[in-house]
Structures are given as structure tokens and as C-alpha cells.
Image (cartoon, rainbow, N blue to C red):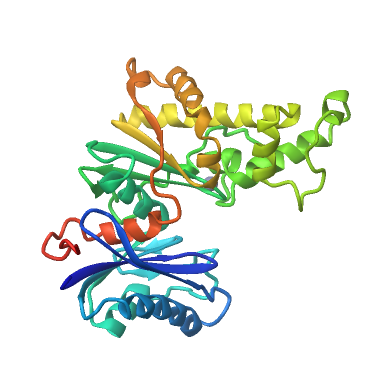
Length: 326
Ligand SMILES: [Zn+2]
């Protein structure tokens, strides 16, 4: 190994870094706690600690590029973290330049959903497909549009925020972004938990039969999924509504994009993997595309490593930099 690419995945609680091979394999992975509540210097210190940990294992191999994925919103063109809710440490922080100047290596920055989608399109569940739509369902809903292994970024890099597409404009649920009826406000983890809690406050035998925890602290989306697996009546109702909302949303996206494949990841996305054929069926009712059913809905391949692999994949278009490491 003489040259390699580093992928760095920054989250609200941890920083993960690794070398990623030209085949998408993760080598020398390091994970350190992120200091998201500290000063900007503390936080970048955690990033350097992760990168240094990987460098220490490289046996003299030269790092030719560093890819970074971070929660948004970002100004990716200028490599700046604007004001990510999960990263209070940074406000208008020039993350890319900070990494570039510290290591004297070129760096690229992308938001976490775009990076994960790129990883899936390049080496994961979307590999071999020209048009890939990636959706991550978790505490939020993020998406990526990948065409020929290149991210569709839009004019300023703000494209593919389909999680904030409004599904119900009269919806009483307001999303964190401020709009009513976003799919994120209807089908992300917190929305699933909130709807279950709301239903549990209705007086009925049906509610009484539910084994779900009755307090907001303990009633998480994970609990709802667990109860749904155990055929809990309230959980079934909540999950059915979630599937319906997702189907409408994917139907809209199919009308806009007609992808070759739809890759679904994230914590909630993988927990509901067995429902993907049902989501596909519902989506076919909400699109004018007569061949929508031919579009496979597949579970994501990368779990925890999606951010690391995807940020390294930001260098895919530069074959001079992304060289085989084995
Ligand atoms: Zn929204």
C-alpha cells in the first residue's frame, strides 16, 4: 500500500474514520467520541484524533484524499458546517479547510445521507444500477440521488432533501424544519413514536390491549417496531400508517426520478425491511408510472460504515486519487 483514501464520518456522538479501498472495503477503522457540545476546537480535535488513529496504522502509506461526511445543513461548495442541530460545536465552521490545512491533504465534505447513498450506489445495494434513489429512515429522513455513481447535487448542493417533501399539507404534524406534513414529520422514528403515544391516549378496549409503554420517555420507534412484531394492535395501526405515508412519498419520487433501484437504509428502515414489498405496492398506487412495480426496493448494504465508505467515495470521480489499497 503506497497511497490511500480516508473516509471520515462525523456524527453527534462519535467520529469514525478508516481507509477505504478501491473496492469499497473498510480497513483500519477507528472510532472516537465526538465532542459536539464543546468548543469548535475541541470538536475538530476529536476529528483529528480519529484521523491520527488511522494514520498510525498506515505503515507509511500516503493519504491522497480525505472525504468527510457530516450532518447538515452544510455549504458543501465551501466545505462549511452551517448550523447542524446535532453539532452545536460548529456554527459556520470551515470544516473542510480545517482538515486540509492540518494534514496538507485535499478534503471533500458532503452531508451524511448523500455520502451513504453514494456508498450504496458505488459498492452496496445499488451497485450496477445507473439511477439510484437512496433513502435513510431513522431519527430523520434523508435521501440521495445518484446517477452513474455521481451525486445529483443541484445548483448550490442543496438538492435531494426529499425528506422534507410535504405529503399532507393539512397535516397537524409540523416537521422540525417548520413545514406541516413533511414525510420526515410523518414517518421518521420520532413521528412513529409520537403517533403511537397519541393513539394510546384514546380510551378504548383496543388501546387497553396494547402492551406499548405509555410514557414518552420509554415509547421509542424501536418499541413500536418490537410491539408490531408481536402483533400489538396500536403498533400495527401506526406501522400501517407509516407504510402508507412512505408509499405515497415513494410514488411521488418515482414520478420525478424513475430510478432503477430504491435503496432503503437507516435504523428504522432496516427494522422495517420485511415491509419493503408492501411499501413498493402502495407506491405503485401513488404514481402514474405504469411500470413502477418493476423498481426493486432493497435494503441498504452498509450499516454503520455507510458514512465512512460514502465519504471516501466522494473521491470516486478522481481515479488518480482513489487507487487500490490492496
Ligand atoms: Zn420538514
